[in-house]
Length: 411
Image (cartoon, rainbow, N blue to C red; front, side):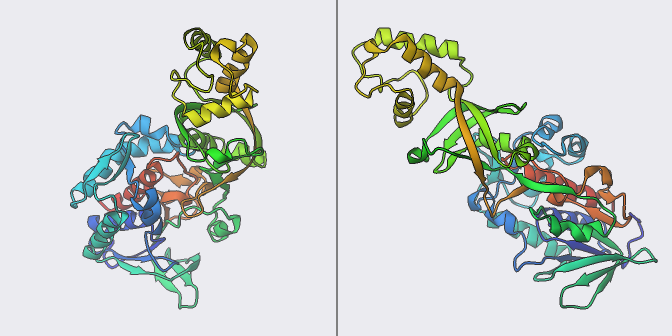
């Protein structure tokens, strides 16, 4: 990027987290730069607004760049070094310097202490205003046309074209292949977009009446694949969700797409206990709780309604007492608790907070500057790139980081 930016025009296409952050950093490093953010919808920062149930999960409390990068099924290698320049610690400091204090919750997610995404939105809008950045909403850029003089014509829907010197594309991810067609015109190839971060829908609704029940630590394995992930597990009306499932869906996104979302999982509801360890505990319960009903237990961190369901799934009568439990029934119950097998047929995505796997291949981007290797003068940041992460604030962190690296080129 040229250091002589006097009167140069920068177009930022996309008014989300990456677009705003890149524009703000570029303006801070060179006040002479004429910057306009173009957003196709009515509102900017709409994904920031709905993130975390309206609280905005700004980042994750992981201040080690190497560990932080491991939360990204796609982008880990590139972000490992990008985080050396701007990581979660820098994000926290950036917002605190502007009067926005963040807090850390038990699972590591970080939110503004106000628990209101408007706090983050107002901070970014205020900073953009103070830096003289113009914002145009309801403005759809249909095409970016490179000119022979090195500049670009922006073809705007129902408006006259605009000529600019540099372009930052931060339009976010899309689950529609055709949404990337205008970027292919710039010489880029596209990694096919497929959903990431989704819940697993059971073919048989054996737990549907237990929606809302969770266990604190489970292991979910996708059979006939290398994908095994752990974490809290949540029962939904349709199947399973929670961090363990969402992590599995992220890492296995392409594989599950190829399977048309019909596959089998094994669940250890008592991770990290083994089946042998569980059998031993069950036998001890039989010995110590002889007169009590099998539907009553206090040795496993499983809610009572879910425990009753497990006993029912292995055909243990609700009136059976521990003393009458056979070795075969203990074997079957232990297997159900540690190696329960379930058929998955379909998925459920959060439409407003969707995350996609796919976009601009990272091999076509210079991560030192975020400049396109295919079309000089065009830069990329955020989820339009083939970068995605597990849930927990990581996707916003990659947006802050890639936007910051772009803007830092002016220093």
